[in-house]
Image (cartoon, rainbow, N blue to C red):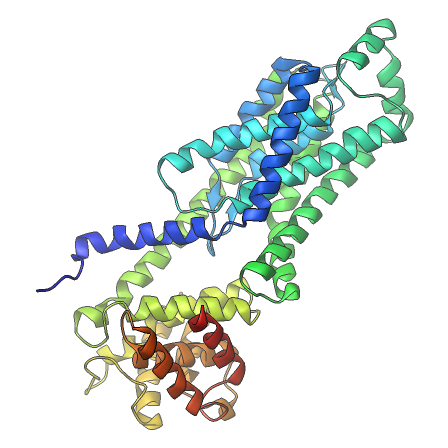
Length: 446
């Protein structure tokens, strides 16, 4: 009896599997720390009370809206520029409509926690593939800046005791008290510096998490975080600074208008991410043509792609290189459709080097004609080359992943995985890159 999942359900099954994998990748230490900070802030507010609750609700709901419409970018990264910018603005804002902002650091953290939690409800409800790491990172970033700005800078450096009710009493007796302190020093420059510090700290945290989670070199992880920060982080800083400066002379009700530019940016990011997602899903669908024709084993391309992604992250490939490698690993067998004598069953590992190169060149030519897959054609063309031929690293990764899957097969038993890895090791330093094989060994061992 055939127990294979019907094609109509395979996409749903894959999506659910990706969702479980993404949730499992969340860092428990980061989540526990975020929860502890949130509960501590809420407890402090419960004891000392809330200042200016109307302002707090306005900021909290905009944070929630930004989180609810956050974007899942290619590579699994999440971005919520509107939510992050609004939360940072509330953490560093000093005046709203010529009135001093009386909230302290715990209240800023509590409002951010409320916004992030409410904004995450829709994602939890539909089990959207995501990790909590990005939400926890944004929250901890806001908490750090709120503490540094409101408790260290305003309270101790400027001497303005920003602690809610006491400050309200002082301001009522002396309306110019806080304004005098805030304008005696260049608060605008300090605010901008703290916002930049927020983005830098988030990038460093992300690099450390990537390095620990994927065994990725810290420099490679930091490089990707810096590239992302320059693209999105500067927009977050600019919007947060605009809100803090404009709110001094405007009413709180203009807050949505101040956030409109970043809201449009977030909409554009969503469209970009959707286009990239559809593009990748199209490539995944095309990669199954060889399976339908009986030229490769079911799920071979997807398994090879996942193996390549994990090895590539560990060996320090950039996000652009990882995307090219994913395209190449999904399409590496497409050349079988254009040769006179395809290999039925798709196991190319036992073939001669000349035959493997023939199939690789045919596949590379098909990919080049598509014209929209980056460097995937070059990766596919060189992946049969022996290690001594010094092909590009993505090609060497693809060869190891492809041959391992050919030898192990679909859903291998532990003994089959061990045997496949042993055969790979027999070709070490002749056919395969030793660093790639060691990475594969660690993956198989887990």
